[in-house]
Picture 1: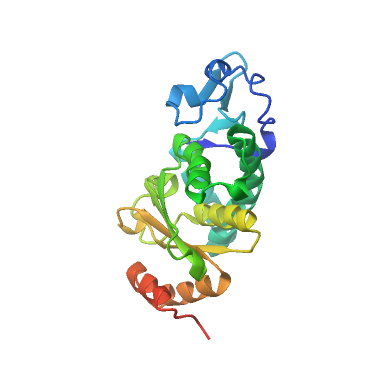
Picture 2: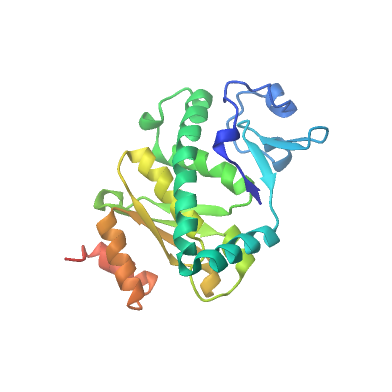
Length: 238
């Protein structure tokens, strides 16, 4: 898997700075790339840069386990909040980074393009970096919430079946990114997880009252289908 801290990334306009030979040959290529095209491995400097000149690092499953277990030992049950906040800050910073390279590469405003184009453009690097494939349901966006499915979550796949949601960094990432994108504060909760024996992870993103209601119902034993049905019916906490 790969982490991409936005603060280390170069400007999207400096396409030749990282020595990315494929990008130098095809600087305006917009479709999905092969793994060996998307990444540039510099053996002399020991660095890995991607198509957007973001510095990447490889991390093993042992790193993920050590990070999560270490947080649990230090702060106990609050470790999930810490991971969520890490993801949230990451999402906000990545939203700025994404908007810069998207508008430079596609030559159009992010706010004026098709949402499906923007979202697939944003998540494609994450898929390439090992964070899993995704599926976004925008059907209920007008009702203040939407669902995001993640297939092959790096965190859940690593921890295995532990009987509880573990992808808090994903939830924070989605909340931070979409909050910046729509200029409104949004929250996110994982309603089902591969680490609970499910086939994929599912996240609910929306306004705080929707997330508060979903969290309450989940703590009361509601399934993802129950939560989805209640939200579709317009049920919220008083």
